[in-house]
Image (tube, rainbow, N blue to C red):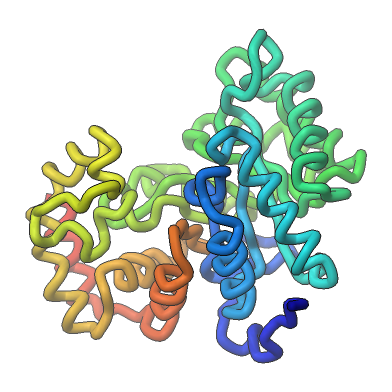
Length: 328
C-alpha cells in the first residue's frame, strides 16, 4: 500500500533554527545508530521511519559505519526512502557522517580529503541519493590538519554532494580551530553533534559558547545516556539484551549512577512524565540545542519521546534539584 503522510504532521512538532542559519530542524530528530542494520526487520524499520515522519520528525541521521554491518543503515534507509518517501524528499533532512574506520589501509579512516570524498561517494550510492542535506565529520583527526579536513568538506558542498556541513565529537579547541578554516572558505558549517544529557554536561565547559558565538547549531546525541535515563533500570535488575546487558561500559555507568536515577524518578512523576520524557525536556529547556537526537528499537519509544514536547518548562526549584542530584 502506498504511504501517504499525515496531513497534520507539521502541527504537532516544534522546529528550531539551526544556529544563526536558515535551516530549521525538528526539536526531536531520529538517529539510525542502532536497530537499522541487517539484523533488524524491514517492517520495523519502515514503521519507525514513516510513523516518525507522521509526527513531524523530518530529520533522519545516519553515518557510514552504522549497521551492522557498516553501511547497512544507509542502505536500509535508502530502500525505505525509494519505496515509501520518495515524493517527500524535499521535506526531509537526511544526514550522514564519516570519520571512523570503514575499510582497510590508510585511506579508510580519519579526516583526510582522500577518505572524506571517497566516503561520501560510497554513502550516496548506498542511500541512492543525489545529495545529503548535512554531511558531518564524525570525529576530529589529530593526524590530519584542520585546514585539509575543512577544505575537503567545503569541496563536498561545492560539488553538490551535501547542502550543509557539520562536525561531531569535537572538543572546544578542535571546534574553534576548524571554525577558523570554514570561515576562510565560506563553508556552510551550521551544526555540531556532541554527546549531551543530564549526566554528561561536558559540552557546557566551553564548547557551547564557541558554537553559539559562531552561529552554529547543536544537536545532542545520547540524550538518555544509553538508556540510563529511562525507567528501564529502576528496579536494579538488568533486562536481558538491554544496553547494560550487552555493554560492560553501560553496566558500569549504571552502577555508578543508579542512586541518582532513583532520586530523579519522583521528580519525573511529579511532572507527569516518564524519566525519558523529563530527560529530553530538560535538554530542550537548556536553550543550548537546536534538536535532540533520539534512538529507538520500536515506534512506541519514539512516540513516548516526542510526547516530552508537551511539557518542556522547568521551575528553578526543579532545575536546582536536578543539579543537586546529578552533580554531586
